[in-house]
Length: 115
Image 1 (spheres, one colour):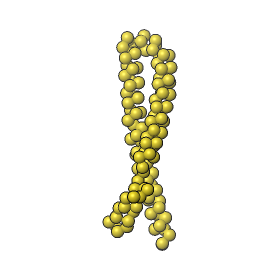
Image 2 (spheres, rainbow, N blue to C red; image 1 turned 45 degrees about the vertical axis):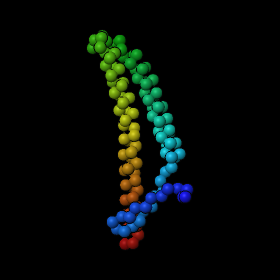
Image 3 (cartoon, rainbow, N blue to C red; image 1 turned 90 degrees about the vertical axis):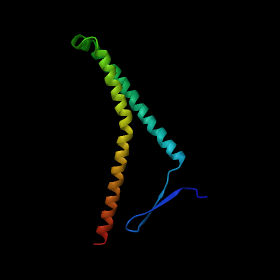
């Protein structure tokens, strides 16, 4: 039994690439860190939003009517939703781009070395 799970891919150019897969412990730790960052961000946003909404409510009700508070709640819920879902999408996209940039720079270094 191996200590680390490894996976091998063979590319169309007959190059073997071997990866070490992350274990359940490191994946769980990464997810806990992600949720801590996300919770901290949402709490800070909620505090800022509550402060701003208290300052603007009287003015908004006098201008837009009695439904202004419902609009503030709807905007805050939509903001929380987009931050919660966008957090994981953003960082998956950034990690994908960073990985492709790393591979292209590594390939450029290999091709310029042999010229």
